[in-house]
Figure 1 (tube, rainbow, N blue to C red):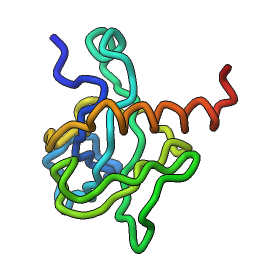
Figure 2 (figure 1 turned 90 degrees about the vertical axis):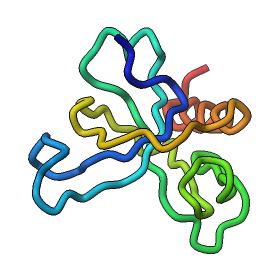
Figure 3 (figure 1 turned 120 degrees about the vertical axis):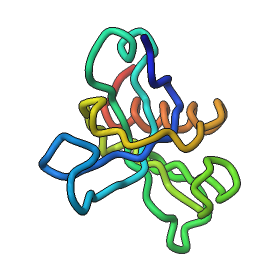
Length: 118
């Protein structure tokens, strides 16, 4: 069963303890960038972290700007395509939204640039 799909915006527990119920969890948003085929066949997913925009108001290569009303996070954010992580699905605390395809394509372009994939 596929719990997470490409483009899902999720909250990820970053503690050393894999359990999402760990005491004082450090939780950060991320977007799922792995394919739905991988997501349904592995216990891991590939994500790019999401950070607060802090004055940035446009996308750059490897950093996709997303307006506050798009993802369900309530603030302007940047998806960092150059900070790719593979995480265990047990680290996901919840799904909070999804990234529209137009933004997902920008993230994908950032991944292509970061990895020099033609």
